[in-house]
Amino acid sequence: MDKEFTDTRQHILNTARAIILGKGFAAVGLNEILTSAGVPKGSFYHYFKSKEDFGNTLLQDYFDRYLARLEQALRPGAAPASEQLLRFFSEWIDTQSCHDVEGKCVVVKLGAEVADLSDTMRITLQQGTSRVTAVLAACIGRGIREGSIAPALDAPKTAQVLYQMWLGATVLGKVHRTRQALEDALDATYALLGIRH
Image (cartoon, rainbow, N blue to C red):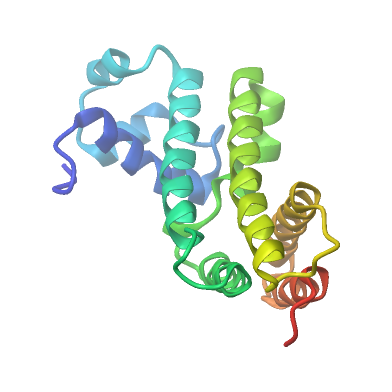
């Protein structure tokens, strides 16, 4: 069992995340997850009502962890907001263009797939992505107030556009197996936020 976690429920989620990020949600059976986790099948149903409940919990867990990292990266006072955003998106390029599935974006991997399979999971994705854009909007708003980001921007709308662009660029990066779409997104981010290269 994963030594970092003594909680069986969390261990199942951690084990499954890597498998599902590699194969997708529908393609992965419970037996594969439980065998990899070294957990008996009965334990799964102790923690999750169904595969859908498990998938929804997996998404909630992902967003909780992702938002904690994002809020830390974009916390007020650590650096100018523009610098924080550019660092965040530069790290996005690194994590999303590498071959290690561990740091991959769950929204990109599962968004289209599970939104059609489960309304519950779709709503969790919707709520999670709204939380992400709210954190981005707060940072953009701070940048506008401090003068490190163009003053005429609408922070919530800009955050929405940026996040949509980066998700789309990540998908195209997977399709083309190149960093180009992500690097183009970074150039567009500079331009959109009114930051000089």
